[in-house]
Image (cartoon, rainbow, N blue to C red; front, top):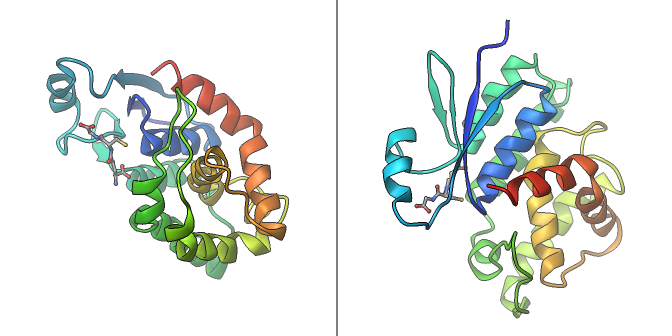
Length: 199
Ligand SMILES: N[C@@H](CCC(=O)N[C@@H](CS)C(=O)NCC(=O)O)C(=O)O
């Protein structure tokens, strides 16, 4: 039986949206606790919920799992592997892409901040060309569909990157651009954004 799950998320937290999407994709039942990051007193609530003072964190009766990547792995176990491809080598590549997003693309992240509630101002993307080229390379084989045939963790993680680039007028070339558009139009992602606007 599935353990009772409570996902703690933060306002305008892209990492929280990724974890939320993965729990949705895994078809798990879960409650949500929201923290209005930045509001007066939010740190007190954060301290009570998260040992790392960061969101997302997923609580069960037995354990608290922190960090979007670990939450994704846990969700994957709870849905018997549904978030990754069935083939071991494809699964390894998928995990590499997740890890790369999780620890990389620091220029894009710092210079094109994600905006959920407002339209961002334009920003120069010239210094970001190497990271945009790397994304183009990763996304190129995916074309206008999900990365590994059916929606999974890779799509959940990269969907926010797809939208973030679009917000700043960056559309990737060729099949990479088609994948970008596919993610932005993905109904589950659109639903997650609507939900996250309430956090
Ligand atoms: N690597 C972490 C990053 C978590 C993170 O940086 N969370 C930010 C929000 S996106 C946070 O909780 N910030 C606390 C604060 O604003 O005080 C993950 O993937 O979960």
